[in-house]
Length: 370
Image (cartoon, rainbow, N blue to C red; front, side, top):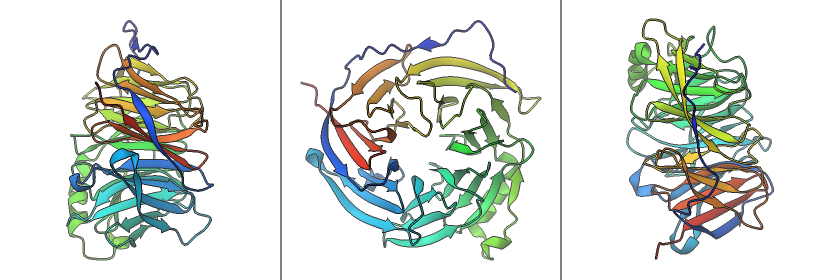
């Protein structure tokens, strides 16, 4: 278990907004009655940087952000099971570059939707309970990871439909896994966190031959020799409650629990003894009224800033890489009162989307500096 060394006090950001960038509401859509749990821009394919997807109930919807605050509906997929409730969505692509929308939720089935023809490309069955988050490997966007209530994380190949690795077992999570993320440059590394209050870092390095094999596998996916990864290379107890979102920032990690802040920390591995090491807590980014679980934050493409909503429908935009942290903007609107489950920042951070418990999508655009 990673221990926190004494003596280094984390730098805490001030909630006085720098007003570095001002945003205003340019659109509000009521998608339906059911809560919207996820919204995500397509950062996989530069042709579609202004395209985003949302999930709520048994529906996956794809939109495009146009000039002047316009949001155009491009397509909508409704699951055959009306009781499905999608919690997460991610963009991926086939080896030929075809864009895929990948969604999962309460049923534990992962739907890979071919956005070029609006048809299901594949359905992944394997998780024994609901899927809480899906993320795509930015360097190999036909690889996805899924975090589940069944206490496991799974690595899948969307091209061949294979479950390559299962991160679970003796050293695995002891409760629901709520969030998972691929390292931006180290292709072997992922981080996961959940209801056991821990963040775990896993390595796929010694299993990479199986990852490569998954691209050329021609037999039935069920016959693939799926491997269990039972032990993480690092285990951190940063938070004293559920950890519902973790994202890499270079080799550092940003994570949040239900205590009104995002924490930036550095895992310091001990090479000789896997799983052990120390943690340096570097910075804290306060987020008032962010004390319910399943609220996720997002970056712009270059990891300059992070946007997070709260229980009261407000958004806080932090400059991530400055020390002390700088609050770029605090966004609030009289009609936005519902909990924001997730935000999505556009490529350059000039547009921020939020999806809410009341089924609304809000679009905020940066006001051009005079």
